[in-house]
View 1 (cartoon, rainbow, N blue to C red):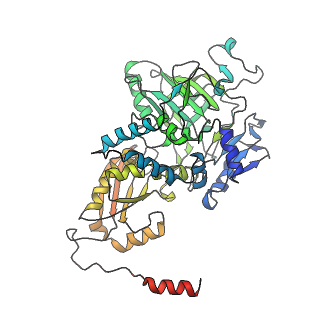
View 2: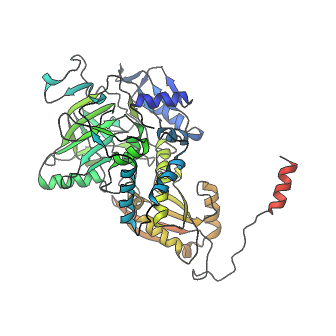
View 3: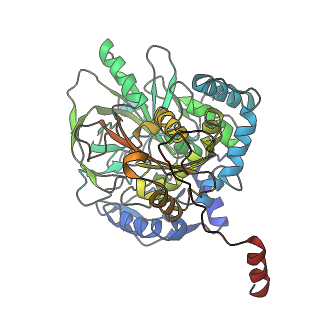
Length: 495
């Protein structure tokens, strides 16, 4: 289902009983975070919250704030216009089985082709709702905006999330960049710290595609065009976080998921394209010749503050928005949070692709306690010795799975979404010296525990039943299970 605006999505959430309207004025400084954090911690992720009267520095904002909009399994499915994320994943898996790939590179190529065949590529249109109000910082005469209260970074209801944060942060931004060599688009999500009315930090981490684009612009000495947009169809934000391979257009995935190609409009002050139905668009550039600036601290998805580090500065050249714009936000911190449900949906959606390269995989889960990718549970149908280690190495080599600190492999009958069940098999089926391995690799730059930024160690644990050839020289005992006929009789007697 394609949503023409974030308000349309909000209407669906309300009709499904998934939205709570908050009319009481709430400060964007800490108060919205406290209410949202309490809601996100409720079983199943609570409800989405529409803050109708947010205040910025004590002044009413003309824009409502929507938060926790995708913070449950049901709301993630609603954002895709489906009964469940698994339903969408199965459709994608079926689409890709037309020609089995011979390797990872061919899988990604096949994914690109499959998405392209299912829906038309993004198309350029002349204008759209995102340009209903234009504040061009480079040409005041051109800008049809209210001269009393022009829209700047200081009066959009951007949250200060946690007490020690270095300032206000845009937390659900879609950041559009372009490869200066190939012209390929990229859509990522990187937090944006507000410095003043026209400059921000640009926190694209070392291993991100936009950071690679930035390094190329730095080598050529050219200013790098950047566009940040918020709102529109909720699938834009989801696709910006999806673990797509470098070079695969996120708008193509968004078109597939919303069952309608994305209409793009060119920015006012640079040549990047953004969705025509976005709620807010912030245009600008990063100057590679400008010194980096400290960004942070920020209360992060790790549950800890990330400390200040130098990052590029983004300069705003224009802000455009809908007249009835809604400001989408999220918060991160000690789990579970909204990002857990978005991350789980990504894993479920791309599970068929993992299985095409590793057919022994039954299921994968990223438990909330692992704050996205620190901890991975994977179940397999094991048929030969050391197969669990093959899976560990394979997953560490796939995109953002390289950030996973711990991978636990269990047998296929284990429910990886039940952390208690996984821990039982981990403790019962392992000898630590024999069944664990340590290796090194790239780490999340937000991980405060590594000795160096962006590099650290990883552990893999084989919690499967041991086979001959795995240095196990005893008979493996059967697990305790009741006979089915007895279970059925007791079910009938005491149902």
